Length: 372
Image (cartoon, rainbow, N blue to C red; front, side, top):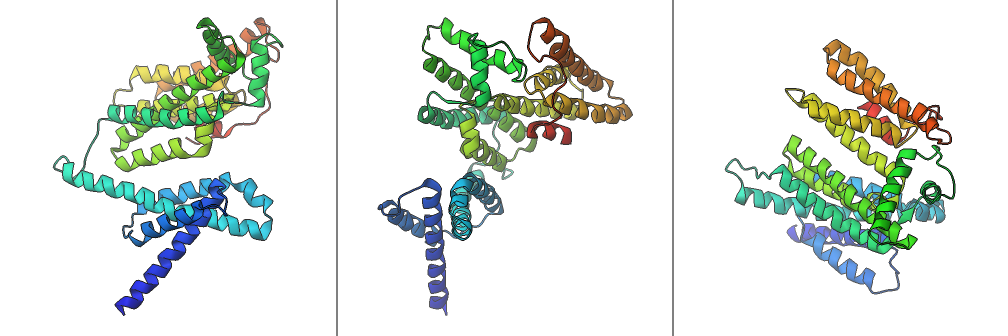
């Protein structure tokens, strides 16, 4: 009976190894006629035959990342046709899930063992949230620099290409592409020229390098904030995987595009709101952050201006009941300031399309602020 169970377990793990091998082969576009799938099959077989640990957090994390990997190969799946596409989607989803389940589970196992041996006497190992922030920044920077070297000098969206034309004087400033973001690009463009860069390729490479460092800093700050609030090491692993390994986060780190910077602003604004509402003394520095980031939120994405107003209306109504007049004042000042800048100031500066009236369409990041 024992041999029968062992035999079934071996067959089950061999099938898992095969599915994972095919899934990774599809994901990484590895040639099936090369020796690499065979090597991968042997590695997967060894891993699954010797893996007995199960962890619910590892299962959840693996499922999330395998779903994103599957969505990342959607063009590859659609081009294969309906039946073949379904088969490929199955292998990509399940194959990556099985392998990621082992990988993430192994990391959690190492952490649990370390926590039991080096814990603080309560059985829970704790890190300084500042150490977590610095470590996260190093990890994100290392990953993004690798992507930067692969994509050098970086990726320029269609909008940003038009913004660069405005920066070099080939066309006037147009608020169809947020002027705030155009001036943000110009800041680093001029700085690159000041330190001796002349070639446009070098300048773009410098801008994307600065951007990846800033994105690493923002994501590290978010990771630090999450750990500070939860004191949960598993959340560090999750944020490192999410911000450091998901392809679109990596490619956005070297993409000159307004939505990338606006995403940073959205995250920092939500953290400032969380810090203010959770602080016992309602620290005034958080109100200043909310005001500054609220103005930036409205200026770096034209349609987000309406989302901020919509969110501000409901927040002010709710906070009136709580008599939180300081927060209401910060929100109203942010709306008033951004309105003056987008209206009279832009018109005075000769910006084309400088009014506040824009198509009423809100981005996902703007909607997230409304839902918060």
